[in-house]
Image 1 (cartoon, rainbow, N blue to C red):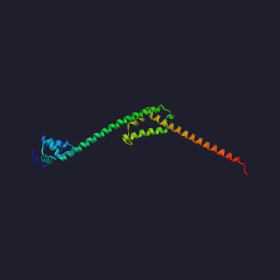
Image 2: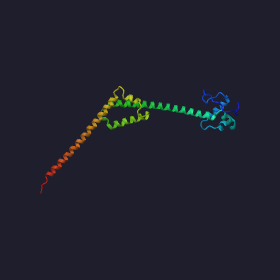
Image 3: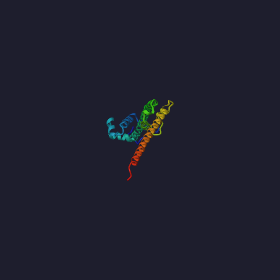
Image 4: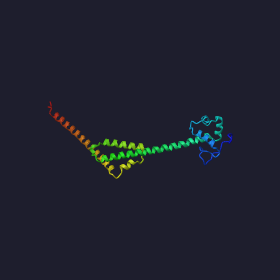
Length: 204
């Protein structure tokens, strides 16, 4: 086949980086070597690998539209790599969610056997904050994850968790009220002593 003809028409039913109807196996083999060199490809390197002159291959490349076809191949591979990467990320997120779900389930089971006095409100808040931050990290805010199914299942873990948190909060409130009342009593006692001491002074 002549290497001085006009650029070929690409077959619309064939991927442009595959062999075209006008290409002989030899011509396509030369293009495939050029194509598979990646984005750093060059006619000179292809010429060295195929034992041809660079000038000769430039004419072949122009006729068989190597640059255009190789760039389309690069875009195709980019799409494949992106799809593979997204799939790997999805799998990793699912695996992490399962680990997180199992961990939350065990924590919830442990909480059902604890009394409110064993865990402070601040501890509960920190624990839930860690869980929710991991949840958002895995799938973003507002997304449904398996952890929620664990916490809202029929095993009573979620209700027990809520009861323990509420009771711990009530205990903390009572302790604060008692402390406030004790401080108020001390203030009143101090005022009474001051008044008594003042009443004992003789007036001139």
